[in-house]
Image 1 (tube, rainbow, N blue to C red):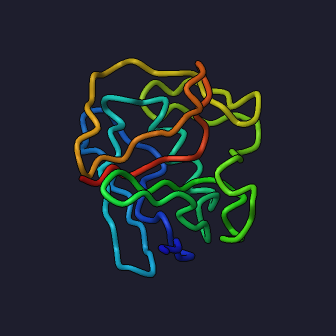
Image 2: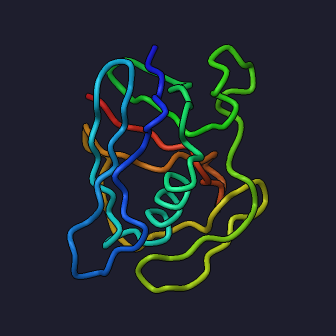
Length: 150
């Protein structure tokens, strides 16, 4: 069982020019610190959404609600603040807007906090990658992400 600490994630820039290095998210957990590069340069909509949620404290205090050994660890559901909640893994962020940190455009979260799908880059889910989770339906990602292991 891994719980995200109050500083999770931290060290994410409010804005990031395209020609600068990608931001790095730092997750403070009960099992130690995890650092992940956020591919703002390759996935600007998804990355900007993640950065906005992190900077507004959305992820603070959330638990990894789905841990599958030798596969992945998932977090980002607001219901996971209570690790025993039967709703953990079913929620997302509130509807609203956020700034695309690459284009400056205003992006929307709607239909339960979901963002539009982004197919800007072909990035594999190698072990150690951070990826947006979704239901399998179009435009169903919002706040849950997973870290691929083995």
